[in-house]
Length: 330
Ligand code: NDP
Image 1 (cartoon, protein in one colour):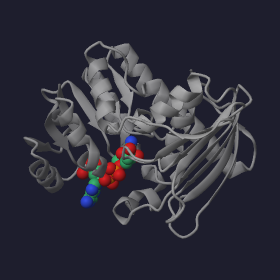
Image 2 (cartoon, helix red, strand yellow):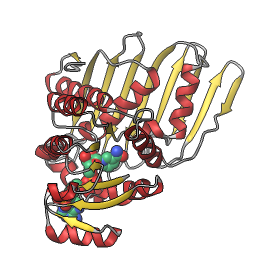
Image 3 (cartoon, rainbow, N blue to C red):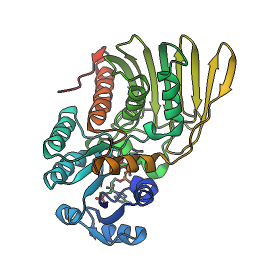
Image 4 (cartoon, protein in one colour):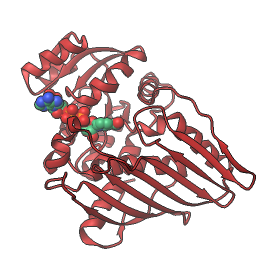
């Protein structure tokens, strides 16, 4: 499949260009708002055309990968859909749930494939965790605790820590991933949330830390912690059930790493999992879906729902009120 990159971004440079090529895709174009960056990015990454015009970026390609800052996702996705391109879009899909819904509805109406690049559900560790849950190995799920407090590296700070208009803040950046991961594991959608957020020196005009509690339809309780300011916390997820607990450390990450342990009345055992690339699996499933086979790892509805949970967390933290999650039309 021939791809256009919409956005001369870090995530494309660090993960997605390699993943697209590993899946057999050809990257024909890259779009940047700056002619110099378009040219230098294209040269650095061996892409034939570095352009500043969206129509030119879509010429001769079947799919686009959108990884600009968050406020640009909506207009760029709508233009790509109108041009009949398949769209793999970065999270958060948009600045509001209504905008994300509009994108997904437009893709449906146009008959193009739409995917959301939630990488974590592609990790071997998370696939193994979900298998343990769905096979009944830990019984009924009582609670989930997500630890996703990291120290944002300097090269990723930029708009994330000081530009609310570009979608900065830890809630749009990381809470969306946690929402997708919990939905993936439990197979159900949060009903309402309570939350708090703060800024402790890194965020300027946006939050750099958040904590929230989610109610699930099954009665399971979910607790999450996201931050840009925690250098030593480490990441993880714990899923506690009536028959056992899954303790996973260092798995809320872009790499195929971390330890997964199952605790039950017979003791403790390490859980084996596949160490494939998260992003290669995401691209591979997306490309297959474009060819009419299966579905993207995370589709447009998944992207709307993760954004809806993050939006509710944000509102709950602003108001101090328990806040229902509004999934829009879904
Ligand atoms: P970047 O800041 O690297 O890129 C975003 C935009 O910033 C680019 O499109 C580019 O604009 C501009 N830009 C990039 N580098 C420079 C530079 N040196 N000087 C000036 N402008 C520059 O963002 P990320 O790659 O970190 O994130 C992009 C998107 O991907 C976001 O939506 C984010 O949420 C998502 N993301 C997803 C991840 C995942 O694992 N799913 C991980 C990381 C990010 P232009 O294109 O106009 O040149």
